[in-house]
Length: 70
Image (cartoon, rainbow, N blue to C red; front, side):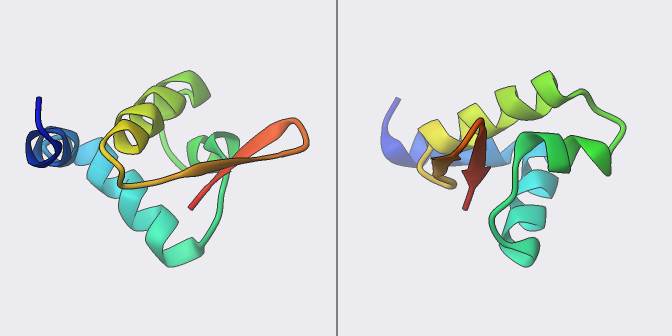
């Protein structure tokens, strides 16, 4: 899969678009914080964030025990 395919595949899912929008508007946040305001588990949020990260749309930086996504 090339870079453009990975981006479009990541954005094809509505939940991932919603998470990307939330990160873009609220700034750096964790999977736990994102899950707390949605009807989705933290593990599911983490999986979606992994796909967004693999596509180069978000990046995660460790902050203690948490990973903050930008």
